[in-house]
Length: 213
Picture (tube, rainbow, N blue to C red):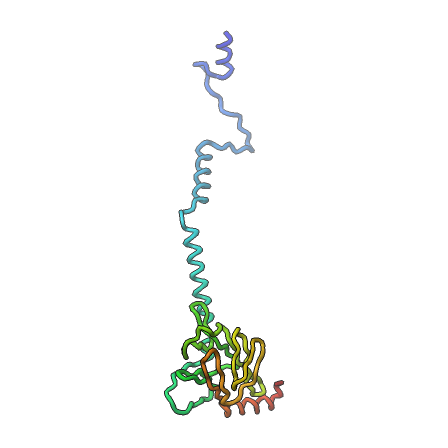
């Protein structure tokens, strides 16, 4: 009798049918199929192919490197490099000065240029490796600037001193460059030639508009 009552209590008798669960109109009863679909969707969203993160990081690094090299290459337009074939140097209206070496000459076409040694990941306006062995030259050895007064100054920024007309210029110091000044950097010698006609015109223009020097 007790066994029969238990079967009846749990609606397990042959003449009994399982009644549906009471369902509130505001309740959303989730079936097993719905739950299974939800689990599968979440697994697909979290799934990541092996190695895809590494590939994305590598592609990102390559893209950033290409952008950096492109930005650095823009500075090359400030200096035009020519081979030295002998004879006098002809200065056009776009060239402020020339840094003339034994093999090449660098035409200065902006008011400020950087001098040093280019590497695989670093470019510079005046790359001294084109003139000769430059292993002892810093990546940024010096900066040449043209002031509104028409005077050129070179600041020493590398570890090794620069010699201008035989006088050493230590790191953090600067010196005025004159026409035909001799510059020596780590055994490489150059002559600094000024486009005097263009510089004279720049000085006159600065006086007209009262540009501070």
